[in-house]
Amino acid sequence: MERIMGLDVGDKTIGVALSDPLMLTAQGLKTINRKNIKDDIEEIKRIIKKYNVVKVVIGFPKNMNNTVGPQGEKVLKFATTLENNIDIDVVLEDERLTTVSAERMLIKGDVSRENRKKVIDKVAATYILQTYLDRN
Image (tube, rainbow, N blue to C red):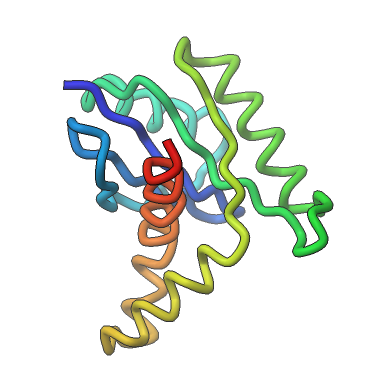
């Protein structure tokens, strides 16, 4: 049962989502608290192995005018490093407004500010992956 993984890569955390085996829906899995690039990659590799992941979709933060800013550059660097350490495809997915959408959904669901902070990256990763799945 193969799956696709979605990642929302931030400076402090990485939100992780997985597709269902039919690759129709995305579910949040966890939030990785970042330590260093080596440990971050190793944790992602463990998840890839455990869930038989065949593709990784990484949210690519672009500016609204379609340019790439400092955070986008960091994500590109992370994606390249990950791609060099695994033997499956890594795809970038435009993630403009995903965190905003995730935040709105959590607020609408009456999730407290403290609890939103704990899950926002995982929810954003779910949005990123679901957008990819819907388009493909």
